[in-house]
Length: 350
Ligand SMILES: C[S@@+](CC[C@H](N)C(=O)[O-])C[C@H]1O[C@@H](n2cnc3c(N)ncnc32)[C@H](O)[C@@H]1O
Image 1 (cartoon, rainbow, N blue to C red):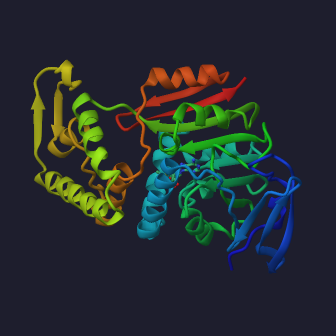
Image 2: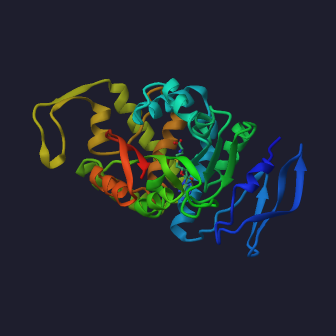
Image 3: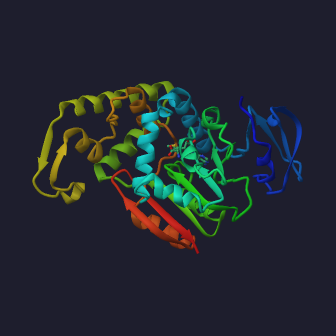
């Protein structure tokens, strides 16, 4: 049964005016709210549908288009991303990028946290990871319809609350959280820097925030991304799925070559480093995004390409830019890891 935990309502406020909510016309299932209306003290109304409060208020084109892209991505591919091997792969990648080394260390840290925000949870795998300490509350939000799949899968975890909400217009009081994580999300908002700044306002003093954003790639790859995305972001969803299949197939063909090339010396103009590369990886990092999953999952590979080419917003950033956001938000960087695809950073609110 998909139901809203009634205790959630005491924690959330109106995303328009930050007044408290009361609940009207509610229908219960097993003493939890399945549907109803949230009305704030100023009369702003929001629906609860299928156990999830629907609190998104941004109706601008870029936002709607980006969220529609994710809604359709998750609708098509959710089951491939809920698979156990993918969950474990993502979990290990998370622990590695954010410097936790192993699950034990991360779970020890979670024991010290009470209120956690998973900003842009997608289909909820990260919320599940953050819920290991049963004494804490995990508030997992996403602006897209992925939240329904997240809720279906993990809604029965007593300490996870799912909400459909925009991380730029959060339904919480300032300084509410002691850990915020926004993994692979902020670059899909209309302005990565201001979205980050906004999130830090919800972090208490001494609280930690972890983010991962796309790294700026080598110049030819950036050029190709801009050129291709100019086309793909205006395609119909169906056209972009077909294009994403082409990219997955190209990635697969290159990968199956199992050929390596050696670049004898650095080529600074193209930001190519001397070394030996698998041909698919070389083309992927320096020239063209044609993702192919190592485990050979075609649907997930298409999903990853679609995720890159279809959303209206997909910004890339440099390490210096990110460092300046943390300084500006008075958040001390305690962990920083740059890899080709992106940059994972944790900061402590001063
Ligand atoms: C690539 S997915 C990452 C999901 C998850 N954090 C993970 O690591 O698997 C990006 C998610 O960010 C969500 N998103 C983008 N902009 C958002 C916003 N303004 N507010 C909330 N969620 C947003 C999208 O709907 C999408 O589900």
